[in-house]
Length: 214
Image (cartoon, rainbow, N blue to C red):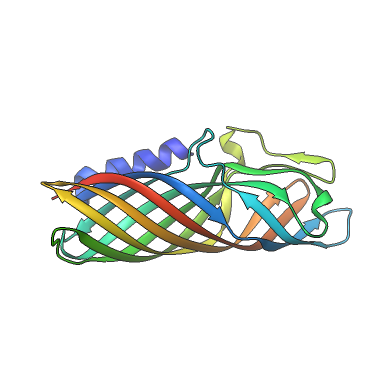
């Protein structure tokens, strides 16, 4: 699923888009309360679950964005953020999770509105976006396993997602380097064996990369 999503964005770029950006970065998920619904067991809550991104561990955290509009002014964008979630523990009921990874992606695909101020010599770009989460979990909850790393059958719709971001671009001809801070939020449902885990997932991101625009 990751490859088709990226290929779709790349294929979209030459036909319609005026620019494309790639980036790497770091994610900082906030602790969150999770609702665990699993057949054969009463509903439970995992309080203040902590996740890490392990962003430099394969598969890397990355993002790709295509846009059309104005170099300076309003832009319309389609963006894929490939985030990962590694469960690290919780303040209450963390023992329910023997293993909880979402590493082929807690993928956020959004449509954005962005506005770029004229470069002088740096260009400031603000953006907001909304879209969907496409999740690929590999979990063992109460001893029951779900998901196989790399198996596309385990990608599923995980809920709605949103982002806000502020970027600084350094133009050089048609190319530009960038650094960007993001905040993403989603109310997501992650499938597990015999049920699901549901919660509010919010993350701060720091990314760096570059792209081309015309």
